[in-house]
Image (cartoon, rainbow, N blue to C red; front, side, top):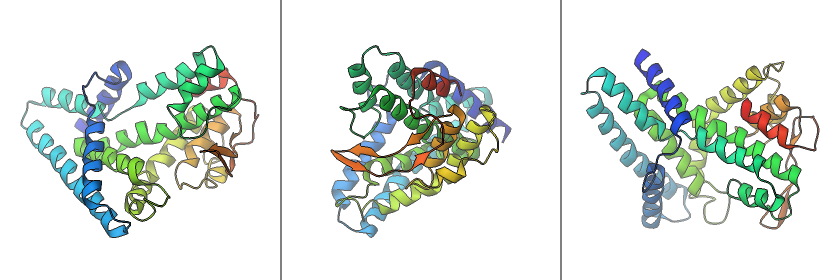
Length: 283
C-alpha cells in the first residue's frame, strides 16, 4: 500500500509538471478507437448489446493493463515506481484542465472566450455573455476535478495501474455512448450506470476537498443543492465550488438551440467575473 501511495503522489506531480505528453495518439484516444470499433460490431438498440460493449472493452483494456502491471512487477522497486507513476500520469488531466480554464480567463475578447469554452462544454456558446462563459468554465472545472483528477487518483491508489486504466476506460465509454437519445438510450445504459457507480465516492470526495480547502462550513453543505442535478454525482463538486466562491452556478442553459431547465447550485452572486475563475483554480 505504501508503494501505491508513493506512485499516486508521483503520478500527480508528473502530470502537474508536464501535463499531456506529445503522443502521436493519446492512449485514451486509442481506447476510444477500440470502443468505436466494437460499437460498429455490436450496435443494436439493446441494453444487452450495450452490456457486451462494456464487457469486451473492459476485458481487452483491463487485460492489457494487468499484463503491463505483471511486467512492471518484475522490475527493481525504484524503476517500477517511476515507470508506473509515469504511465499512470497519462490518465490524469489536471494540468491540461487548469491550463484550458485559465486560458479562458486570460483571453482578451469575448469572441475568443466563447470559442475557447466551446471546446470544453456541449452547451451553446455563441450568445453567451462574459459571465456565462466564466460560469461554464467554473462548472466544467469543478465537475472534471472529479472525473479527471480525483477519481483517477482514487482508483490508482486502491488498485494500482489497472485501477486507473479501467476507470478511465469506463469514463470514456460513458462519454461516447452514455447519452439519453434515440441511438444510445438503451445501448449506452450500462456504460452510463457503471460510470455513475465508479464516480459515486470520488465525486463526494472531490466536493469535500473543495469545501475543506475553501474552509466552508458545514463541510457537507453541498448536498442540499448538489442532489438537484440530474446526475447523481456531477452536482456535488459543482455546488461545493459555488459555495466556495460565493457564486450561483447552474440555471437554465441552451443546448442545440433549446433551453434546458436546470437547477441552481449555490446561493451567491449571479454575475461571475474573471477573479472568480482564478479563485476556483487556486482551490
